[in-house]
Image 1 (tube, rainbow, N blue to C red):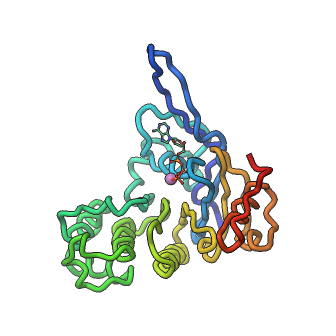
Image 2 (cartoon, rainbow, N blue to C red):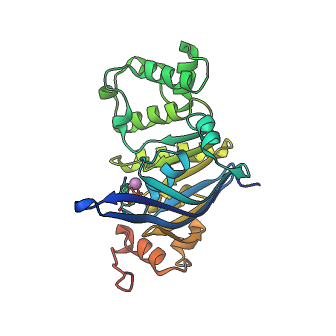
Image 3 (cartoon, protein in one colour):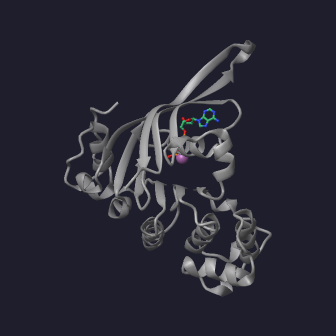
Length: 265
Ligand SMILES: Nc1ncnc2c1ncn2[C@@H]1O[C@H](COP(=O)(O)OP(=O)(O)OP(=O)(O)O)[C@@H](O)[C@H]1O
Ligand code: NI
């Protein structure tokens, strides 16, 4: 299977102005590598501030104006130029947002899905809206609801329905499960797995290590702006991951006794 997205040696810097107009540059993403093929679910894991969101924003062109990106991002074997990105983002390449506040509180779910279908260049009649809901295991009745009338798990599914309106080939899911109970987390990961099985490449940022190892094809582990290891999910449970940080990440899970690895800086 050929690679759909290939990121090599990605860095993201921000130019900032100190007091007295002294300029300085910070580089939160220093060297990240990641590849994703059609049909694959790649989990991107690592502590808060490691640069996971920035990687997604760099690929999708969502960084603020003072950001500088270096390194290689190839999509379908060709450099993802600004021009290609503009044509692809929102259609072939989508972000599943981290926050449900992305939903418009004043509009019914059906209208919001209709809007997403229109932006993706699809037909947007009632039948299409109902089909988009059904594909995410939501009843047609949900179209009439407002966001505040949805449970946390349902709101996540609505966000999924909107992100998937244009049948994207690449989905970057940034923390798709915050604040959900265990069953809802499992259900959302099952959805992401199904999206990959249907042929898309899915990159999922997650802190739910125990759940994500159940569905991922590969785990990309990052720390301090660098990817430190790519491992098979099974390697985690078997203690076969190499990098001390990867081991610490696993050992720190509640089920594994919250062990804090002191050798890790
Ligand atoms: N616009 C910005 N200007 C300056 N620094 C930024 C900017 N955006 C992010 N950063 C910094 O870059 C680092 C990485 O941020 P990022 O949001 O990618 O982390 P993350 O791995 O997604 O963390 P989390 O798990 O908490 O979401 C953080 O230290 C953050 O403060
Ligand atoms: Ni983040």
